[in-house]
Length: 92
Image 1 (cartoon, rainbow, N blue to C red):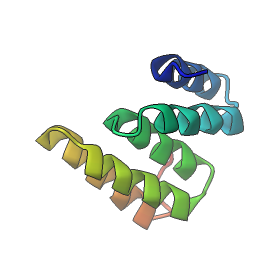
Image 2 (image 1 turned 30 degrees about the horizontal axis):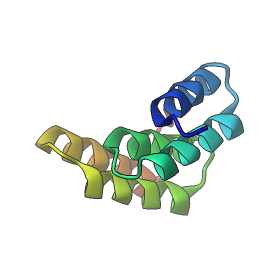
Image 3 (image 1 turned 60 degrees about the vertical axis):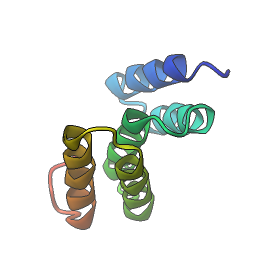
């Protein structure tokens, strides 16, 4: 239960199987185990966005921005924030 990478992979598998609630649960657990991992937060933000959980998506995207370790990660987090700010944008 404390293997953050395994939780992240299980979340991705759940996304592929269109089990969005389960995926979010795995991503949330991964962020609790390893809270400074950028891509956990970024993926969680996008999953929340798919669930139309705007506030949670924005919070996760801001955490991703806080954890970004490169200009590319910063831009990805900003893109997630822009996507959250525009609820009519395509969901991924």
